[in-house]
Length: 276
Image (cartoon, rainbow, N blue to C red; front, side, top):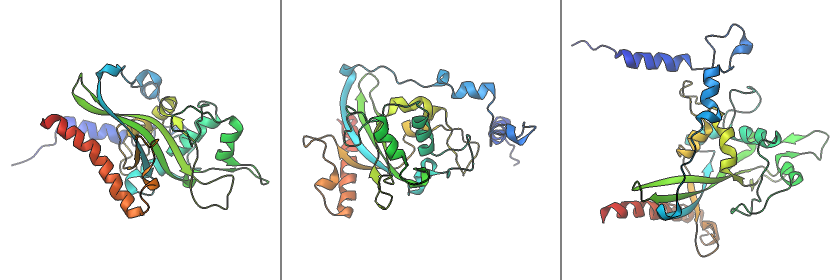
C-alpha cells in the first residue's frame, strides 16, 4: 500500500528548514543574514516572555533547595558551552558570552559573592570586573567561553498542591572557570552568583545554536528552565549550613554515589506522594 506524506507534517518541515539560519534565504546581501524580522523580534521580546506565576506559600506542600553543577565537558551540555567566541557577532553565542556581554554592557549589574549562595552580599564593580578580565599585562585578557568549565545552579523542587504536581524553579546560577587574577592557576574557581530572574530577559532574547538541527529555535532561558541539561547534585539544604557533598565524602567516586542518593531523595518523595 502506498504511503503519502502528511501535508501538515511536510509544511512544518519546510518551515523549520526555512528558519535554519535567520533570514538566510531572504537576504539580498550577506550582511542581512541573521537580521531578525519584526515578527521574530516580537517573538523574542519581553512581550513573549513567559513570566513565573504567583505562588502563595500556603500552596507549597513540600519543597527542597538543591545545588547542582552542570559539567560543560559532557556532550549533552555542549549547547551551553559552544560555539567558540569570535566567528559570529550576534547570532551564535555561548551561554558565557551572553552573560558576560550583559554584565559588561550594564544590563545586569547585581553580581553576588561566590561564597554566599543566599544572594545577600553584592560584589563591587571593580571586584567582579577582575573576574571577567585580566588588566595586569600590556593587553586586556578577557575570560572566554573556552575558559568556563561548568555552571553551579541553585534551584528549588516543590509540590504545588493546587495542581498536584512537582515542579522546579531555577533561582541562581554561578559560572566556574579560569582564575583571571592568577593565570598560572589551571584549577577552575567559582566566579560569582547571579540571580536568575535578572538574567531571564537577556537569556530569553538569545537563541541556542544546535549543531544537530539548525532549525531549533530554543532560547537559553527555555533550555535552562525546562532542565534540558544534565547535572550532578553537590548539596541539598540541610542543618549543617547547606554543606556540600565533598565536605563529608572524600572519595570522588563515592561523591557521585552520594549525589545519586540525594537525587533519589527527591524522586522517591514524588513517587511516595502518589502511591499512598
